[in-house]
Every structure is written in structure tokens, then in C-alpha cells.
Length: 62
Image (cartoon, rainbow, N blue to C red; front, side, top):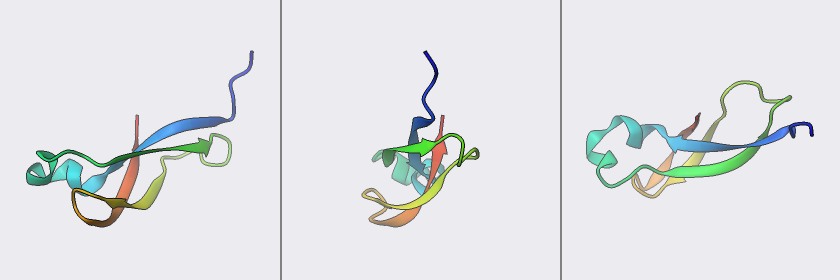
């Protein structure tokens, strides 16, 4: 059975991850799918972070 081209990735807020005060409340995470052939690098999207209460950059994590 062959592996699928689309994989599920997790996006994590960069500001919550680096700031210890915001991290105590939690870290915003989203899950999405990406095409492994078209997007070979790590994804970066601007998403809403409920802990920061604003739109921030969310980067793909392992």
C-alpha cells in the first residue's frame, strides 16, 4: 500500500512558544493538511491565537 500524498501537519503559534508568560496559559495549535509534493518545506500561516488575542504566525512542528 502506497503512502498518500496529503499529510496532516500541526501548526503552533510562534509568539506563545517563545514568551514564557503567554505559554503558562497554553499554546495555540491548529491541524491542517498539506500536499507533500507541492509543499516540501515547513508551512507558515497567519492564524488567530486565542492566547495572544490577535493574528500571529503559526509554524509547522513535528
